[in-house]
Length: 414
Figure 1 (tube, rainbow, N blue to C red):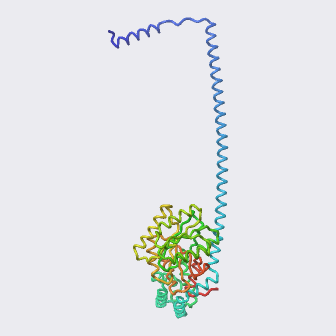
Figure 2: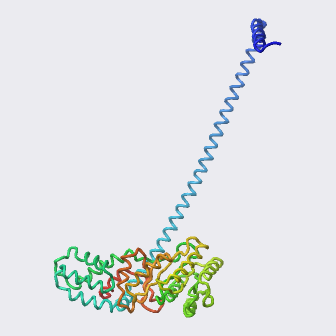
């Protein structure tokens, strides 16, 4: 038996014997032939290498050219897309500016200014008389305190009254001031509070169908407001569906049907006592199927302190969100100007229950408590879209901070 190291030894002996063997001698011709073969092989390998390099260079060049062409095509496409976007934004900005100017002109036209002033006459009468009595007096602590009391009794609230009088005193304290100067200064201070809340709502923007809920207490003017807005939108070419979600009041359903007939807009309604959430769900599905722009939902009037009614409103919101997680896209709270400071608690309650996104204040054509809108603007960061100054469709106007502030303090229309 040969051990493993014995095998290794025999292998080494064999190698040594092989190395000791002499290489056979070659003739001159054989050596020359070998050298020629080596040179030929070397030349072939050189040519092959050159061909490979040339092929690789051509491939790189063609790839670069193709890449450059693709880059140029991509850049051209991106530039075209950018130009199209800019043009779209330009056209949209022009349309938005035109709408803004039209709304501003509508909100500030002399007819509205005069109507609003007349509507607020009862609240401005006492304020105007008080301001006139303060004229030609020094604007000292006593005068400012009297003015602050006047503002509070005009339903602006203590916070607004304190802010406005503080602003009025800047640069004018302890100086004689006329009644007209006080009015102008007050209008400026009130406009400063209201201006950030002045916002024209563009119902054509955003998703389709755009779902808009109108909420508020009984008698606030929701149904009438929806009818007026629907009439305006119809004139602008919108395709809308009105939803009689106030299934508790047959009168509300009939009232909405009348507005729908006037504007030639379909109204979806059910029998009295029907499930409002189910009705709204059906309305949204129908709007999608018919490719409509808007779904305007009238909800049942409810008191903000009635938990079961507010819970039902929350259910409507939940059901709508099953169809569209972002819906409702607008929740507009309709406020009655005649309720005064109670409007603040309404805003608070509906804001939490339904996620209010904007406000409409109605009945400003016959109230002594219009100043509460200033208090609301001071307390809540909610846009004010419209104000109502009458029963006709044209009496619902875009909110103007300037016109409202001037009318409130008794400055007459130009």
